[in-house]
Image 1: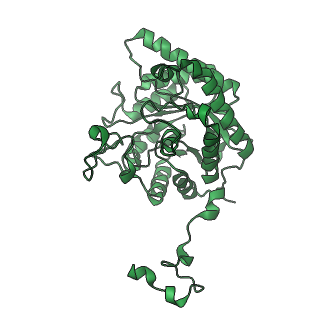
Image 2: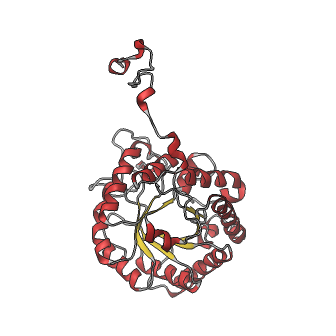
Image 3: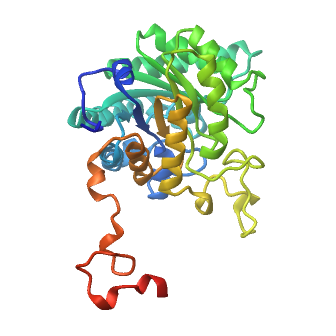
Length: 354
């Protein structure tokens, strides 16, 4: 029987990983911004308070497409981000609401429920006060996640591996499983100068349950980093969650992409609101998924820019049959491209004349 997104719902993250790959859909910030419910810039997820039905709907769409995980939309719902927009009073209500919305969908679908913490943007190894602030931010968000009975906590998008280690420590204090992923910027090393393989090994040595990379790099430029990470961490599951954009060795991150065909971009760069020309198609996502699995990746997903059709393509490439597979394309009956004998004779061969 093919694995489905809602099978084995009583099993936790590590048990599921022991029996096969896990898919975790991300990308809520970009998708809800595209839909007109979240403001680009600060990218604070106020949508969980203002339009909770839209968040629930996207959770459901991602599960329908093949996600094994419903991740509470608490990315950038931390104290520093809310301070920037002058809404720290929303901190706890926003986190609790996001967890409640995700919990509802996870319970209905049998998916795993994940809490989330992320980069704080204020980390400084030499700033003891900033480190204390970060520790407190992680502790409060993870505390609410634990009270929300999450199955595990995702700590993601860290370019300082030391900040990732701080997040891991906070997750461990809550006695919850952890998925810790780093953002691989164009330098090819963490801000401390560690290779991503070394950083992931340090995270494993500190007790992380799953380690890897998320965000910043597209499939083509994340894939070359995965072999070394898998080799460095032994039996620990490795995660790979690229952004679905066509990055290149010359422009390895979606922040570094440049569009030679349009010169009217705000700030002169496509990131973050004009990346449309660079979006990967579903077949590229399937190709990445197969290659990453061959490299030893076991925890899969997509980050900023992902849409449900990308998630379905990833799930199907892993041999899964999510509910959305009922609607996977079949061109045999297409009026222009089809080959089915039921098509009218005058329709035959139209495709070659288009």
